[in-house]
Amino acid sequence: MRIEKLSAGYHKKIIVSGVSFEAGSGEILSLIGPNGGGKSTLLKSIYGELTPMEGAVYIEDRDLRNISLKELSKMLSIVNTDRVKPEHMSAFDVVMSGRLPYSDGFGLFSDSDREAAERAVGLMKIEAFAEKPFMDLSDGQKQRTLIARAIAQEPKYLIMDEPTSYLDIRYRMELMDVIRKLADQGVTVIASLHELELALMISDRVLMINSEGAVSCREPREVLESGVLQGLYGMTDEMYRRVKRQLEAGMTGE
Amino acid sequence: MRKKSNKKAIILFIGLVLILVCAFAANLCIGNVRIGAWNVLRILFFGEGDDKVRRILFTIRLPRTLMALVLGGALAVAGFLLQTYFSNPIAGPYILGVSSGARMTVALLLIFVAGGVTVRGYMLVLAAFAGALLTTCFIIMISKRVKNMAVLLAAGIMVGYICSAITDFLVAFADDSDIVNLHSWSQGSFSGATMEGAVYCIVIVAAAFFGVMLMAKSLDAFRLGESYARSVGVNIRLCRVMIILLSSILSACVTAYAGPVTFIGIAVPFLMREAFKTSKPVVLIPASFLSGAVFCLLSDLLARMIFAPTELNISAVTSLFGAPIVIYMMIRRQKRHED
Image 1 (cartoon, rainbow over the protein chains, first blue to last red):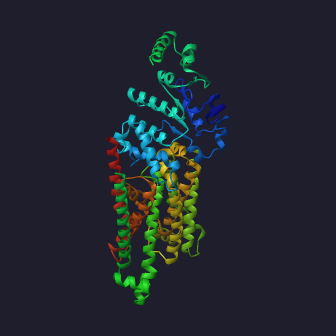
Image 2: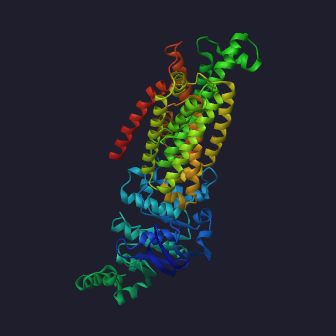
């Protein structure tokens, strides 16, 4: 996947501009930056919900705009921040809906679809509430179900907008393991994260969006050494010293 | 667990078909002149029997029964479509103003165009279609500008009010004789059914139903909202336009041939969701059609029978049974969300 000079925004207002980077197979890229910096906007343009205002997204050397939605749905899956309210759907039904790109014309599933969904359920460890109505689940359980849904879609590219939201520390760490496992299988993961320590721990490269919508891309160790985080989040010297100490401890503690 | 629910669905479907057959038969047999079930069979399949009875059956009861069946099903499917689309269980052709639009153009026809000329059945039909499609196009125009579903729904209600207001203005300035015509039509009844009309209905509704079934997969994806639907390969714009077109064709057909029939579009899909305990479109579309047909047949039977020979309008009956179901539905939903 290659992003070239991408600018994106809503209603002619550019929010992120001039983004260029490449993501290879099995790479994990995390997206960090202050609130309102355009993390979601960038992700939406990467998975094609927003048409880029300038530049383009290439998936396997093809412009995203020339790839049909049907084809794209077998290559790329998403977890976004929408709050979904499906009625009369169990958690498993929600996971199954990730198999719709592979189902027949009426949306009926085959056994292999069911197996793929069950694998995703196993990977996200949501068996215990898989048969419960989705609407009755806690926010964290819903989030894990939606991540399982995206995994069941068997994508080559997994794009997630704040996948750790609503998850407590244990499930956050488990999610990191799952992401690592998927990347080892060749899935490219691009995810926005609030938790810097997780971003630095898990990613091969870190994309930073500042509040002006400018994006830079570095390796985790560089991020810490160069001190860009201070400017990125507009922290005072004192704040940054404390944050850096924590992050360094996190990285060496591996 | 999942195998069991499959079996349950099959049993429910068989049950629905059986009830439908019984309701169909009852509508043919029961009336001011009672015709025995055996007699009905003999007349239908062997062409035997008394001439007078045959005429009653073929020119009155059969078309009326067929029409109630097909249009009841059409209403339920139209309601189901709009509910899935707006992920709002009280969405329906009425809420979106489609029926009011149809009524408005019929009023226009009766009062301005037809002045003096006798209004034929098919003119009413065409007028209603034009009105429904006009309203639908307007809604589509709004839907292109507004992404938010709740706003679109509110816009639909407003459009409905505007159409009703215009209808009221027209009625205020109309001659009495014209109003009588409009009044009887806008009450909602299957009493004017003819065999020709029934055939048109069957063709239109069958075609639309076929289209809806083809959309089952897209509707399935829509349950998780537009963004996720898109991510599993659904063309949202096209799907949005198709849903609105199909649902308005279905509801225009109903409004044209029977006038406004209330509540079937809301109550029936809800009952089916509860009975089948699923929201999977490929199950619910045929289920809604079948039970909408049953609901409409029985309502029409009651409308004919309660104060026979005086006929009630059908909406009086469907409202009486449908409205409590909708209230119950809203209370249940509220409860479920509180848990």
